[in-house]
Image (tube, rainbow over all chains, first blue to last red; front, side):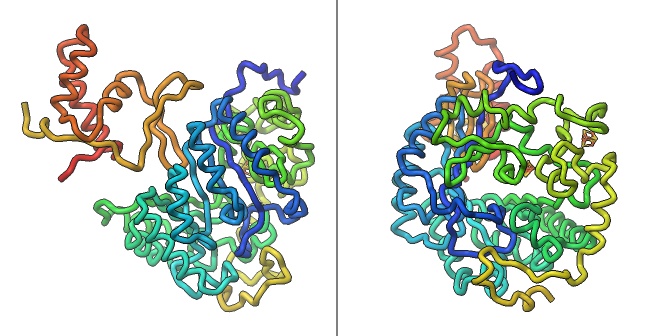
Length: 377
Length: 93
Ligand code: SF4
Ligand code: SF4
């Protein structure tokens, strides 16, 4: 029995598998989407566990595979897993900070069949970049890796996390991306999950900053002939409608975390639900039968105003994690929606953007933190 | 036949073409995305090998599908223009 009468046959396959192979990372970004409570870090799945997960996901129809983390390069079996996945027919994406990459590894990964590398930058400015990631010389390293990615003929996506700290340099970011010959560039305003939620008051840009950045992107696009494709992602805090979370809960995306938890989205672990583990069940059982995966499928779980809303097939009531984080009730309408009785919360949060946050900024792994006042002025 | 029609297309290396059993169709895979192809698009794209010209691709399709309607060439040409705009295929300058 499922709570919303979804029959097994109407469940679509998980086309996208996000393999978070490790939470370990040499960087300490204060907007990391990893859980704030990373106690599972040391209980990572083995190589053969991952082989089984990949095989089962592919059998179910998964075709896009993201190797992510943390920093996936820290797993020594990455090349092996890429080759294994590619052999099964996956399109393999590596989502990396570039720290720990070498020419030797980039060549090995190419040979293993890696299809694409997404490289993240913290800024277009060396000093700011190294401060945000809290690691010296990481900017230089990233530039070097970007050149190697193109030299080895990978499609290259650059991901810039946009925050109040770097939003004013969006033009430099676009110029740098063009110079590095990127294919796609995500100018992604940070979404407030994980560490970013903790640090939201520091990170959230003002509406004026966002509008300014957006028009800069449009101007740059208009003047472009060829060059990278820029994708500008705004935070939904300023919107009237929520995002269609994960294209619908349990419809398309499946995340497996370093310790083997299977999640409908990478943030879902914060919800008061018990999620299954790939060590104990097959992916097929998890996807089709598990209570947590069926819990928010369809719309029977909804309360008003979502329940009677004619837009519910568009946004599925918004993000469950966001509803839970902001209201404490995971069944509620995402407060981003102007129809939500909690929508006023958004204004009180966004009104504070641009003023000094009342708490200190927390780096991932607090004890390694350095004073960020330099970039937070 | 226009001059344009003797050019040789190749698949953009940004994309990977493959048959997906779970979806029973060809798909184009690219960084974090996928495009499902209809059968005729798939027939055309699978002919592209970086050696055959547009005209040769038409000939091959005509051989493989003798019952195809007369305006097959036109359809192929239209699709290739579309595919070039979408950057799925590239022509050497
Ligand atoms: S009320 Fe619910 S379903 Fe309707 S638009 Fe808002 S979030 Fe979407
Ligand atoms: S449940 Fe929420 S956090 Fe999770 S993916 Fe959806 S939008 Fe994102």
